[in-house]
Length: 237
Image 1: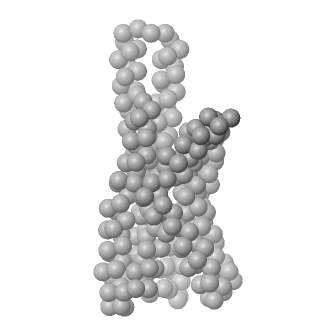
Image 2: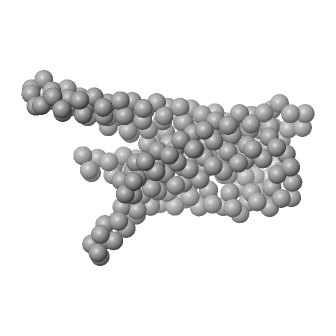
Image 3: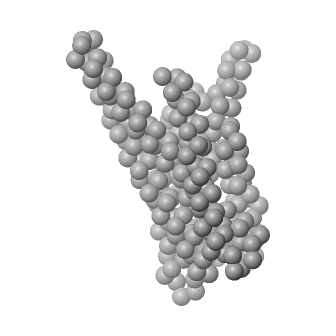
């Protein structure tokens, strides 16, 4: 029993890196500390488009938090859970982006220009990361089917070469998926939160440099953050 518990604990903890802790702290602060008083004070829950946008944003941000911790190998039904949460996040993200764009640019009263720009940059990054990440995992699943078909045919020299090629392509597709999902969590979801922090600590005339600096900083940490997951995969090859 103790061996099983220790192994399970290890599976959960392998994803708890410095980057994950930082991204998750930012997520929790933004969603559960900063946003609720703002939502109540502004009575945003009465503004249907904005409330729906925020609901989608909460859903995709929390989906990223969950899936970045509970990757497929960490749970008994990890693949199924990870996929289901990912699909919820995918749909929520698309809806949230559409409503966020409407609220930022198309209504008679819009937020400050710097915030509208920042939120749109984050939204575009979100959509790009979602679509590229989805295409990569779809390609990974297609290659896995081809791999199983080849294995069912029995071993021969031609199959061996083809299997090696498929496995290389699978690793590339999975790595692309990982990097884009981490970019989604870190940059697309994290940008509005970090822009809020920058706005709180910097004077108004520094709002644009603060916005740009926030996005640059998140871009710089996204790659090594994603790399921590890719290295875990390589260890199991």
